[in-house]
Amino acid sequence: MRHAAQAFAAGFLAVFCFHQPALGLLHSAGIVPFPPFSLSPTEPLGVPAVLSSAFWGGVWGLVLVVALSRMGKQWLWLKAALFGGVALTLVALLVVFPLKGYGLDWQQFVPRFVIGFVLNALWGVGALVFLRAFASRA
Image (cartoon, rainbow, N blue to C red; front, side, top):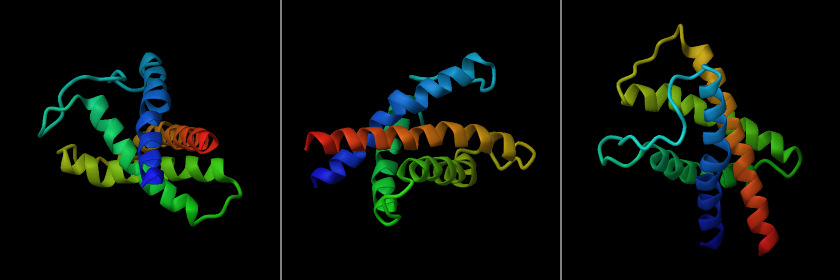
């Protein structure tokens, strides 16, 4: 149970410390139109967007730990980055966006994938940073 809580916390915190700051850099460079740390309410519960992202980051933290435990210890940082960059981005583009009514714009797929890959790969690295920090304290 403690490991599950740590995995959730690692993914949750990685949103605030890695994903959202990277989003801020992309926003300030004019690459993405929306700012980081958004408090705008999400549907259907009206939770602030950044808290919703952090919650789902925590859920993905659980999945990341399971995935990494099955992949071996070599190249762990690269595996965490690729897991975040590929898995989270594909789920966002192919499942979440259509569910939210954004549709699947194939002309924008590659640019959105690249942006999502960068943000989510940084989330994966950040989650591993926190997982390692939690493990060193145990």
